[in-house]
Length: 105
Picture 1 (tube, rainbow, N blue to C red):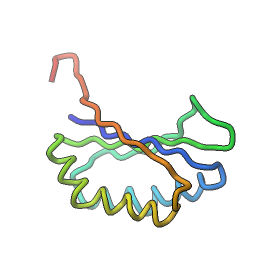
Picture 2: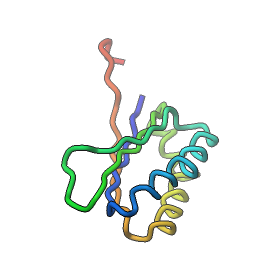
Picture 3: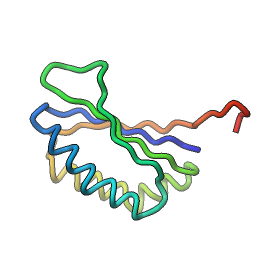
């Protein structure tokens, strides 16, 4: 199982609109596409710079191949829509992690 995390940073005055956009636009579209599971948005409380808000958007996906397919078919377009909506006020970086279970799977 792969955990796909994108960390976003933005000015405090954009945070409310960002949260609304994620919940009303991004999460429903990703859920409908079907490759990404258990989408959740969290506020990051540590490492906060004055005047900014940070969020982590996470999804679970079965494999790196499915993640790549999702990114090509939907993820890139959603990133462009985010940029169009918030211009350069929202910055993000993504991390792909492998979930490790006690039995090694």
